[in-house]
Image (cartoon, rainbow, N blue to C red; front, top):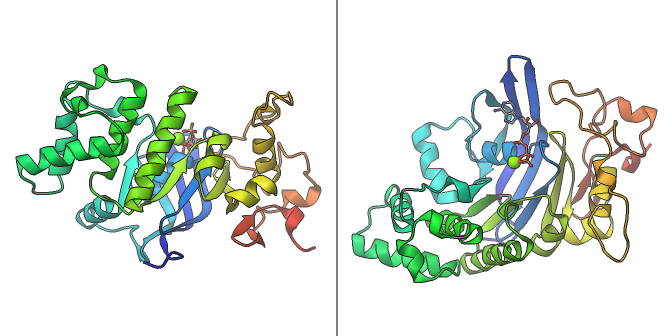
Length: 322
Ligand SMILES: Nc1ncnc2c1ncn2[C@@H]1O[C@H](COP(=O)(O)OP(=O)(O)OP(=O)(O)O)[C@@H](O)[C@H]1O
Ligand SMILES: [Mg+2]
């Protein structure tokens, strides 16, 4: 596969949750792609739509949510509106999810060998002997000792459980892993260990990844490109070096300024202001209520994404030609 090939493309994705009090516009015209072997970070504060985009990619948006418009292309083929049977094949061969709060999704009454074995057997005919070897080798791949095979989830630490979830995600050799905040419930040291495990797995298997998170420091160390969302909109996407060296969108600038540093104590800037109600977005730029650079012309329409550098796109009127 050519290194530059887009194996996943999200095109003009709109997802809404139809609640009795109105439609929550959780993803608006979202565009994103992932190339072979690449890690793309998806960042933005709580409620901005990261999990919604992940679930839409997997065709797993839960009611009352629905993909209203857009395409999800895997190797060029749109999977929106495929039948459940067709989808099941794609989902396991191409895509795997490490869900948000994954470690709490392990079944407490099943030993690790049973949960991992069941997941594999649900999709493959495999002998008991091969299955055991496979599970042990997966545990080894994520740096867990053999004894974990016979253990129950409650006997494992949070970081170990999270590594079991990574092992389950890679079990079927997917082309793309979507990891929804894989490290956020863990302490800083274990976070780094789990992040390193993901990087090792990625390197060994050559998978691509979408890494959802809000730890910009961790993103800086892990991902190749960063995609920044605000209130259901993609506001900036770019190579990690250019996003950190030259963040363009005022929201990205706030996110980066808010990375704590002991050498230079700064006010906690990014907490200023609240996101508007996603049922009732304003006309114009989604960031207008919190933007330090807002001007009257920002209130007219959500700015189109414009290319500000190689693969670096931003949705902000300040970078558009007048
Ligand atoms: N089932 C639902 N019904 C109604 N609204 C929903 C539902 N699920 C999500 N939402 C809304 O959609 C928006 C996006 O939610 P989503 O879970 O995608 O955010 P997120 O970026 O993953 O946040 P977090 O960082 O907290 O995980 C939020 O405003 C949320 O309230
Ligand atoms: Mg989420």
